[in-house]
Image 1 (cartoon, rainbow, N blue to C red):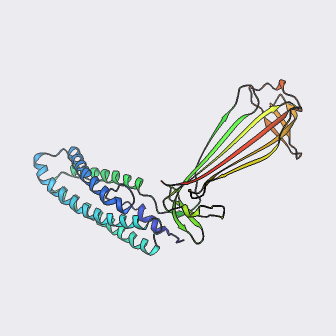
Image 2: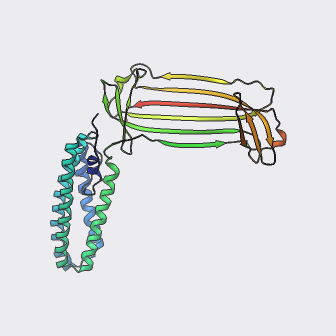
Image 3: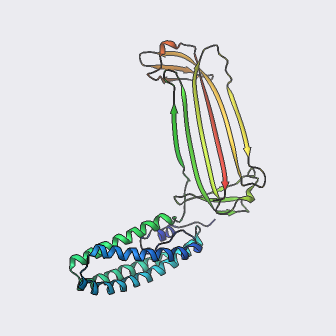
Amino acid sequence: MMRLSQKASIVLLCAGLTIFVGKVGAQNIDDDLQVARSSLKADRQATVAKAMQLSAEEGKAFWPLYDEYRAKMDKVGDATLKLIKEYAKLYPDIPDARASVLLQDLCDLEKQRLETQTACLMKMEKVLSPAKTLRFAQVENRLDLALRAVIAAQIPLVPIEGRLAGTEDGAISVTEGVPGGNVVKTYQLKATVAAIDTSDREITLVNASGIKTTVKAGPEVTNFDQINVGDQLKITAAQEMAISVVGADEPRSDGVAQAVLLAPKEAKPGGLIVETAQVTAKVTAIDVEHRQATLQFEDGTTRTVSVRPDVDLSKRKVGDQVVIRKTETLAVKIEKP
């Protein structure tokens, strides 16, 4: 797989984008741009007019200069659009050599944008007061900032190698006065298939943060040929731990059980793995004053744990059994977006 340099990511981090696009994708940009530009042009001019509060005499001198300024800025936008379209076509694997050219072109456009803005302000100051010229500069900068924020939110970063991270959540449920309870933790990860190496059975995944990693699909992935670029990988892992206290003579069933369910043939790869393990520990000591209990496991190890304030320790005794049952579920799914 082709390795990316930092130069490629800088292409998107530069703040010199003065146009709006709806989505990354060369086929979408032209249509989105036409709709966005027509509405933004009207909104922008109305915003400037309201903020500037020009007199009739000031307006006669201001608006021709403003139209000239926006026409030049639109040319910069057209050139920037060309870069974005090429970026969309090459994404996510942009060769370093091409990334260097795109970076230089974008820096040149940013320089041109600043020079155009400076020249405009110098002309504005000849027909407006310094205070109103400064107000115009503030309004333009704020409008440009709003556009850049929209673009930054909709164009993903060039991926960099790293470790994919998901989101975690957890919950604890107990019954008042009853020792033990349930602890549930969940982990979710989503990523997009950005590239596939069929010869080495490798899949390049990219998450929403622009982190890229390559994984190898082992022989157990029988439906490897059903994976396509653009597919979404979803991983959900859940862990539930149930703890209860039973009498010393009650039966127990310690051990491990596992169930595996794979996607049917010809379907997108995926599967579900459920594993349940249960162990029992014996209460060997109870410290009522410090509200602690000492547990001994089958292998001879011991552990002292705290007891919740709402549990009446006078009703518990040495020899009681603490049953710990842990259920882990891993669901992996690849589907079309």
